Length: 164
Image (cartoon, rainbow, N blue to C red; front, side):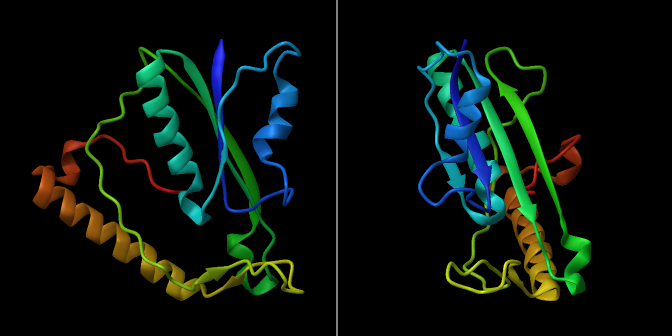
């Protein structure tokens, strides 16, 4: 049985209710014992939801579902960034894909991507070049720190999970 349903997103659908609340409609009518929250945190929301659920599964031995989703209704000038997507991941004991415990983060409060609450503009306020520059900096930083702190080089892995 699923014991956790956690969502990661950049955008709330409802300013009072979580996306998780809506997704509960997809579970059987008698399935109420399901923990979880929405992680609304720019690009990091989906990663946070996955890490939280992995930790929860390790403690409980139960299954959880992680949904990472967002919509990007952008101005025409930023059309390369437009779209909508979602992925659902079943997380639990004895996984087919191993997630190594070593990880590194790079957080900085930047103003390259904003969704002001009271703005008349539906699409985000975005500085695409600055956003890409921050992304590349974060990638360089985390790879270098992994090498320094964990003595692990990028070539040691088959794949990486990034925030998006």
